[in-house]
Image 1: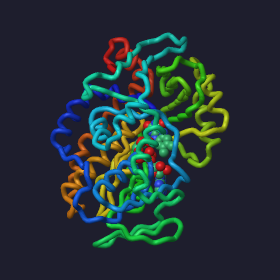
Image 2 (image 1 turned 90 degrees about the vertical axis):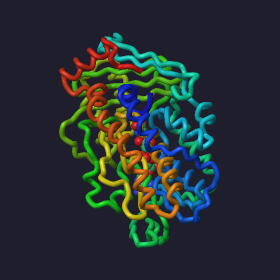
Image 3 (image 1 turned 45 degrees about the vertical axis):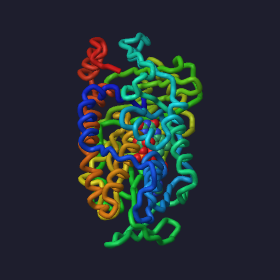
Image 4 (image 1 turned 30 degrees about the horizontal axis):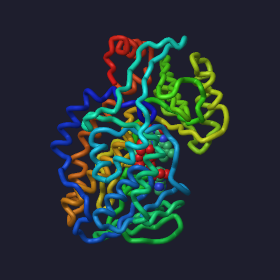
Length: 412
Ligand SMILES: Cc1cc2nc3c(=O)[nH]c(=O)nc-3n(C[C@H](O)[C@H](O)[C@H](O)COP(=O)(O)OP(=O)(O)OC[C@H]3O[C@@H](n4cnc5c(N)ncnc54)[C@H](O)[C@@H]3O)c2cc1C
């Protein structure tokens, strides 16, 4: 079960979309050897899944790749990533699937609990299927980052502590000024800098309007194993507007807390103490294992706090700049597919550029036309069914969610 939540709720309904999309839009090309294209200087902003995977494919296309990352190293932490379907195929084409499978986590059970810790319903995880088309793996976020990073094998120029300050597009190239004051020219620029993408803000008009607020906030902290639950399982406890979730592994526990809020909250995203207090205030009266969870919230340490949002932007590219992953089409942690969407996006973009090496505009169009219907289907389901199932807002949604659990309408 990936990220904050799980994609199991979407699987049955999305299978058709995935199948149709793959058949229609996913080209059968495979970039296994460098293509005979002109070598272009390419800039990638962001060194997470989208950035590292895009870099992998661009070097395979024969381009000269620079990655800039605002942090001083790869940004670690977060919940595991789900690997299945097209993502397995893509990792296979990248030659990375065996490495991923070797670090895959054991299958995890998923239990919905009430305040007395009674199990309302349980979903038992299947063992990895023999048939690879049905298989599903989960891997720690950091392990996948390391695998992607190692795959670049020093073939890219990676600069930490850098971001784009200014970007000007000309007919033949993009003139970029970095935060260290240096100027550079690139043939193509890829914004892989996440949900709050700097590239998106610099290139697209009205970029802030691209963020679609889903009506809630979530907190996540990974701590050493707590003993709050057995390893290899997830437990969820919901009250109207409040959800607490624990993911248990052999060596660590994910503490996840989410609250609903119709209005967006005005807070300083740099003020960690304020964010911790927001969580403490919302959850202070909740039972179950929440008091023990809040002990981890109360102390300082790395955590992830953000609103549940999606990026819905009219076009994923402008001129010589294209967005990949969360920067262009964040599906939200509720969808549980952020990591795989970034890997799929990078591969689809590379396929499109391989097919149209001399026409980046046509390639960017094909990339978007092929992937957008799938992204929109995932976003729609996460914003409706995903939110009401995982974070029921009120008594009615909670009742309906519990009915579905009892009648086994939620399937793993
Ligand atoms: C530390 C961390 C923890 C996360 N934990 C979870 C989680 O628990 N659950 C979940 O569902 N999702 C989580 N995510 C988001 C998840 O990784 C993404 O949804 C998904 O992997 C898509 O990947 P991405 O590469 O598009 O975006 P991201 O993984 O968000 O990566 C964006 C990268 O761009 C970098 N960046 C940002 N601004 C700039 C800039 N101005 N210049 C250069 N680089 C920049 C960031 O530092 C980051 O490395 C986390 C992301 C991060 C960075």
